[in-house]
Amino acid sequence: MSSVKEKPVIPGEKVAVIEEFEGGAGTYSTGEVVRSTKLGKTQPDLVRRRLEVKPVKVRTKMPIPGDEVVGQAETVQGSIVNIRIHYLNGEPNNRGFTGMILLPQEPAMGRVRRRRVIYCKPGDLLRAKVVSDENAIIHLTLDGSDNGVIYAACSICGARLVRMGEGLKCTECGNQEDRKLAADFGGTQIR
Image (tube, rainbow, N blue to C red; front, top):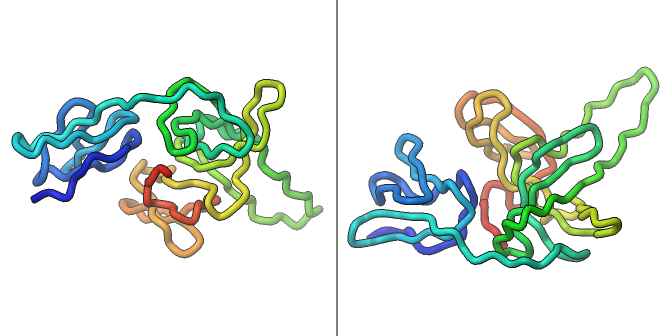
């Protein structure tokens, strides 16, 4: 019997393998893996061995200070990251909210160059905390071990990155990258 159950999923998340289920609406296949095309909940049909991803009811609440969000980095420019918010306090939210993270500025060290800290890259999924909604701008922070990148793809080939010590390594090409990782990086659990 299959281990696939109803659960919330994000776009691109692995939901099954071909040997267990055929992909249905809201899914696509990459080799032997069935992945979600949308923000939703898996709906396994054990009789037909077919798995669909159905959109879930979303909340319409505006993010406020103290809320936890999960979203995708859309742009990373200098010290500003814009995040498209997909989950608010663990519940799906497709209202189109965008949050902004102001990254800390690194002090100039004269002629000595320090390695630049990479907090995230476009396309990364991040967990962040809302710290302000002043001037109708949702300000977020990556402070704390629970916050940071929870899923990332390789900048070279697009394959999945896995944690390797404090950094990341591509499962396909071996490229190594750095990010500000959440403690549960790679688990893709929305909480």
